[in-house]
Amino acid sequence: MSARRVVSLSVGCLVPRARLVWSQPHRTAVRTTKGGILPKPQKTAFGLVRIMMVVAPFLYVGTQISKSFAALLEEHDIFVPEDDEDDD
Image (cartoon, rainbow, N blue to C red; front, side, top):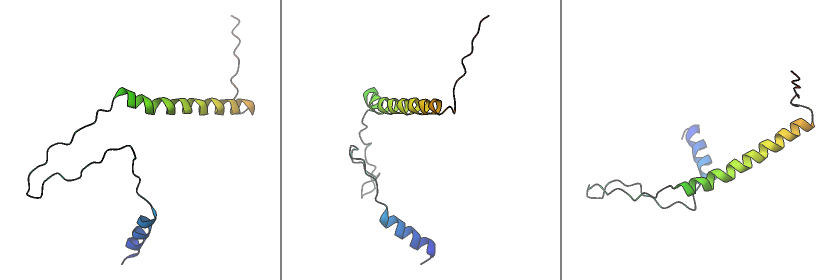
């Protein structure tokens, strides 16, 4: 056995495969045992509600992190926007 094969075997045993709890089981076969082509699997619509359930929380968390980081930078005088007085 080569060293590369041993390393891949040892790493493969330690890293568990991630499984999505909410995903539907899927098939990997395309043909039957006799050689016939299987019909197309059913598709689940990925609606706007599901997209918003993912996007909205991450967008909110991202804005909170950036807001707190901007306040931290301003507090330590690392980046303080200058007030431009335009008295024209």
